[in-house]
Length: 124
Image (cartoon, rainbow, N blue to C red; front, top):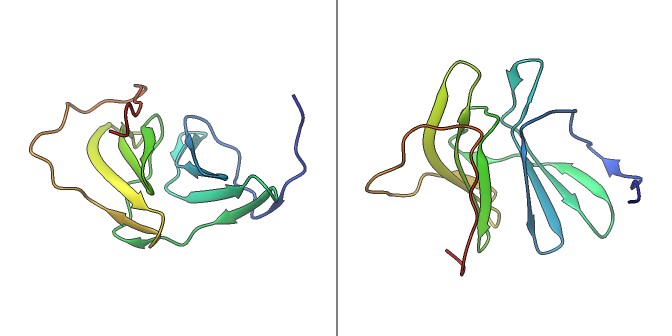
């Protein structure tokens, strides 16, 4: 293990966040600290070790922790989690090309949940 010297807008400490890789970029979303959930998105450039706080367009998702996130193409899909008061059951994605939050059309969603797992298999 090696601790990296990082620069830029370093995210505040948090737990139960997501961190997903797309090419040489790491995207951090949500999490909580002392019972307060975050809804911010940060990107770490793994080549320069520079953090960036992203200004996202579109609707702004409910701040959350204990959710899942995974990339399918350039889109980081996020499901569920908790806002602190209750579990969430929404599905949304961050389009990293436009840096916009979107809600996909779906027929049905699983029940609300937090502290679960998700993965992408075969690009889906």
